[in-house]
Length: 243
Image (cartoon, rainbow, N blue to C red; front, side):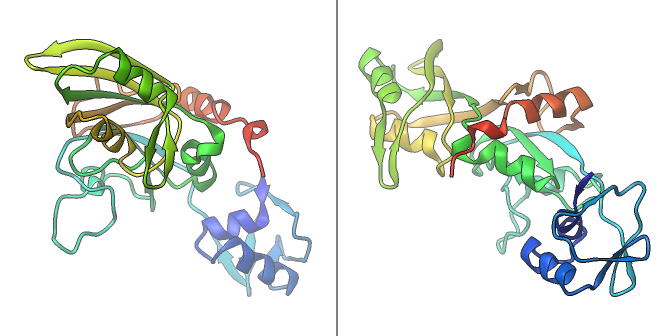
């Protein structure tokens, strides 16, 4: 069951506010009956919904995980014709968008879904869903650098801080860090480290909440299991939301 305005919006009728206007105007029917109550619940499998007597069919929610390689953009169109992450999932028939954008030079876990509510809960800072990154930085960040990342770094759009930071491997003159964040600002990992004088040479996201990328090859995608979807939902409890 879902709210009628959400069902209509998901079917592409318009915003939820616009769908509310259609409902109160008496233009929406369920099983032939005119509906005017905004809180009405609809079961897509059992109810026939129409707007101005035209049948409405909403797409089912889908959830995919992609291991995005470097060089791909997380947008639906690029005037310069550069490769898009969407190009790697042509098999997804539904209209989906990316959850957890990664810049062109970054790689790793990316979700595709048409479930807007879950997408918002996963990415909005107020829900505190953790994102895990493995970052190769120039030089060797010391204890003071790690302390600063944990206490917070001031950027142009505010103070951001990591939930945890761990050095886990050396690579020549560079160092691999594992960084866990629960913010959501644009390119924040790169900006935080640049502020401390450490250039990011590679950045890959390995997890969003409890879902890990594991051994999925670069450029490949897979459906999330029902258990994974339920686990994601439980990682964004509504009680964490604040006005």
